[in-house]
Length: 239
Ligand code: ADP
Ligand code: ADP
Image 1 (tube, rainbow, N blue to C red):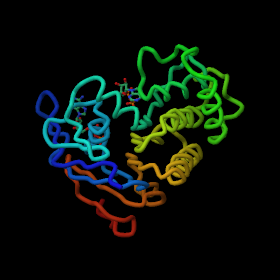
Image 2: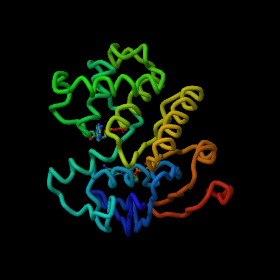
Image 3: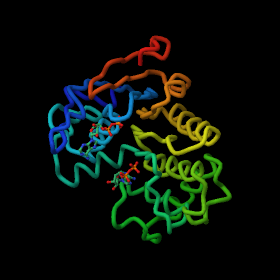
């Protein structure tokens, strides 16, 4: 099953910076794809374009065979509800509990309505607690998000994305703010959950060794262009 098809994706920011130039990319179900490239290459712009956090300048993106051309709020909400997002800086609501943060994933997108605890059913709460246990946070469920370590916060971010029951997860530099030990735990957690549930994953990384360790496929980006697309074994030292 094709989850995502990106064709000729181009993004020019106000001021004329060409962040992406004609990117083509097809993602199949269950693929675990590392997107690598130097800082400023366009990795983050690529992921944000797919989730429509930014509007592409040119090109097409289709998700589950549907062109993402509409700009209506209801279409954006529907697509984003099926695409889990994991951020470098976690994007948790600090004054809310870990459980509430995960439950926000049920809405599929950070909306102003998120945070109203009573909106969630008992079944949702149980599902969220089960997910937290799966990522090793069974003892932090009722803590405030800002009481956690960076690695723990990112595991909350992963649980929030999984709570959406997504077809696709986009992880933008998920380990860039973490020490090596927490990084390994976070990458293992993303990888194991995606592979087990057949969720396709695109993960931006700047460490080539980490990309090689986990990815089923590596996409290299430089200067907004795709310069490599292949298996970890095919990746040579030039990237
Ligand atoms: P990466 O994630 O690979 O570091 P980015 O996608 O963040 O790359 O950035 C690609 C290029 O676009 C860079 O030249 C960056 O400076 C520029 N850029 C990113 N965001 C913006 C923005 N909001 N406005 C203008 N230029 C931007
Ligand atoms: P980072 O810390 O990873 O650079 P930012 O703080 O720049 O991320 O936020 C990126 C954008 O993502 C913001 O506009 C924010 O509103 C949005 N956002 C936050 N949480 C979610 C979510 N769960 N799903 C989709 N978008 C989100």
